[in-house]
Image 1 (cartoon, rainbow, N blue to C red):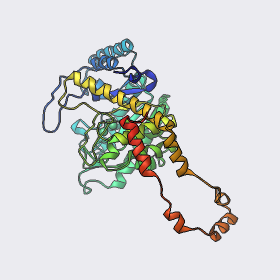
Image 2: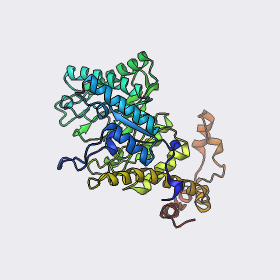
Image 3: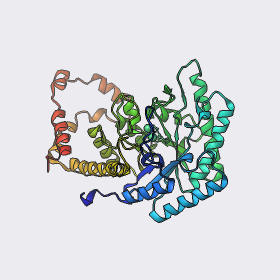
Image 4: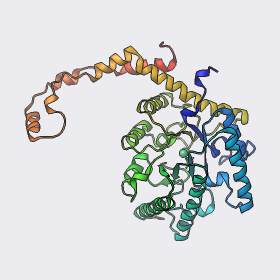
Length: 390
Ligand code: GCO
Ligand code: MN
Ligand code: MN
């Protein structure tokens, strides 16, 4: 392994307890790996070179833990963090596993379930903040339906808004410096999940009482499951100053939720994503929300985790190469060339500009017949990725 691709703290590579700790259970088969304790996972992540570890409340503290058990787990976990130097940048609530959430949490029809979801989330926020989290993720895995006969989507939106407003105020009231990051997913585990895309989340945020506290946590696989372009959603979030966190993994279009190693399936998309994050100077966590193939033992899980980070760093180097490649840059200049002939129409609207633009004449046929060198640009991109351009 070449040293320049070893992860460093400034890369902000994080993993969830549930990612490398995934035991390989699926709807068709039992666990294939033994369960690691939370502190064992921290040492494991320290060994592979991660910067941080994130968790759902119940990844760390089982839902039925006694106060004494909770205290012991926390003590061991904090010791593991201190021993390894790992930090906890993000925390979240498990609002999907327990049967109580079978009809959703904040959007459940039963008001007692909705109240319990708020109760559980406030406790989980306390836990996250105690361990240093500054981003709090909301992934509404069960906030959806199998049949629209069961729930009015307007009611669901209203309930979700009320819950997030309540929790923003709770954070403010406690003096927590927490930012909320909403994570969209189109389906799985529900037949349809509300606010299915990052774009839908971005629009919803503007309807909240504290939109400044709330951003998004887009995940590669979630837009890809829906056949959408993930980069475009990330760019929109960035443009709105809402990219608070990001979940990196990979996924074939139209499949079940695969959660593959970052870059494993759509390498070119992964490249443009890394290039975007690096070009704009994204400074948040690069969180790998993925898990190893079910075929792996824990040596394989180490290969998986190292692979996520190493692929990111290789793509980062490729992005720098792409930005410096003379032929690529010359093609971009050609594509972006501006002869100044439309300067008089640019910028803010004035009635004069509008009039001048309406009476201007354009050689539509000449414009339409101009060739654009995108084939060459894309081929050069592939050749950078394939390592045949120096
Ligand atoms: C999924 C989601 C989750 C969330 C996690 C944190 O598809 O299962 O991506 O892994 O990211 O629950 O909120
Ligand atoms: Mn996911
Ligand atoms: Mn995720």
